[in-house]
Amino acid sequence: MTNQKGTPMRDMRPRRQGDILLVPIEKMPDGLTEVPRENGRIVLAEGEATGHLHAIQAPEASFCAEDLEEIEGRFLVVEAEVALEHPEHDTIVLEPGAYEVRRQREYSEAGGISLVAD
Amino acid sequence: MAKVRTDPLTPSEQAALRAVRSEWLGVGLSTEPADRKEAESAVKDLYAVMGWKEPMTVWMESPLGGCYAAAWFEEFTKAPSKKGQLWGQLRDQLWDQLWDQLRDQLRDQLRDQLWDQLRDQLRDQLWDQLWGQLRDQLRDQLWDQLRDQLRDQLWDQLRDQLRDQLRDQLWGQLRDQLWGQLRDQISRAWWGQQDAFWIAWLRFAREVGATYDKHLDSGLEAWSRISRSCGWWWPREGVVILTERPRVLHRDPAGRLHDEHGPAIAYPDGWAIWAWHGVRVDKEIIEDPRALTVERITKESNAELRRTYMEIFGPANYMAKAGGELVDKVHEPPFPGLIDAELWRLPNPEGGEPFVCVKCRNSTPEPDGSFKDYHLWVHPELRPLLPDDALGEPQELTAHNALASTYGERGENYAPAVET
Image (cartoon, rainbow over all chains, first blue to last red; front, side, top):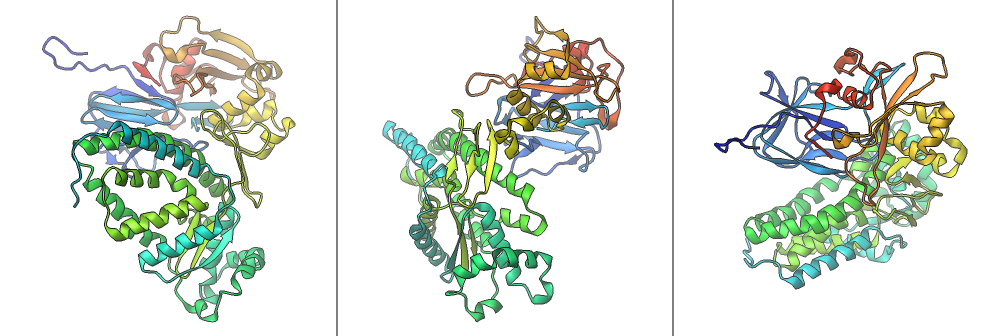
């Protein structure tokens, strides 16, 4: 989407790839730490039953965490269009901008809330 | 550095690429017994290229056996005071088997020798250099094109099938089975036949003009021969551990590990993996129909496994046996992720709050055109599931609100622009 001057208007609706939801945000929060890449890729999440990854190969993105020890509180900043890939889902092209990375959660009476593990 | 050519891939080269792919896919999926003579001779050549002393060879029957043997050597070479409990177990389990193979070759002096891990050297001195040289030649336009072609033809198809489907599954299974120290041995293996996709890439690049230094080229050749003739292998100083290929390898039409009645991969020593359309499951799930019960499905915490169980058991069968009640069904989905979404309520057998789940569908079809359905547990009042075990406010019982709650959203705020 662009306006009449050709400047991109950002679509603020979330993007979903399987159990990952990327919610566009205006800017990255302060005080984040970059999550190191694995074999050159950003790995947003890994499935334990299948070994499949939600991954970004391109260098034009950074994955950051409020706390590296926690899976919650993670953000992605994209500098130029990058592809988010997963072996079982179609690739999503992410436009430049900041995103909150949310994982799908499940509820259990006994165990409270947990991330959807796949 | 060789500067090769600037014209694009010719049609005959593209045909050659497809041939290379199918040849190496065959290598990666082979269930022929290892060609032991050829593997041993190729290993000798590789050691010679690397400037290492000729090793003795040990054969094991599976990657699991290979891990044990690799750990055995690791422990064997430690000073007696450093040998731990692991050594006792390994010695008892493996002594006869290894001693039979080694007694003719093993000499006292080997005991004192340093049995270095050669894997890192192989990686640094052969692997990284081959890739480095290839990368240097992959810069201009032709090479961009070649890289794209290779990526489509070899990376996506060969790698996904060999690495993601086979190697990662084998790896995952080993990781579950082996404890502590022994687990380290997995990451020290070379993958033999399942290295096929790397090798095919390096080789095809050479066919259309990439060049490697002579000794690297000889190394690639020896490597290719190892890959063609056996399964995983472990290089060490003075000894190489080689393993058999699987005897059974069954896949679904999409190329995922799958067998409805028996193991999807089995090795000569009996080590095996059971899988349902690429998802690894316990043996009994496949081989004993009574193993799968409503309770087991309900209690399975891994959503992918639960989905698989549900598929095997049949969702209608599950809901009928569990006393499920359909609360909401989406007829006009506002976005694709809600196609055929359903909200179900099930009585809690222990009498607490009812179980509520939303059935949602993967937006990306499976290779055969079908779709995967997931049943995800949600709060009985569809409170959004927030970080740190926090819950949002209750929502009306709809499938849309339920799906939104799994991402910590309320239904009115949840309508993704893209879903895959």
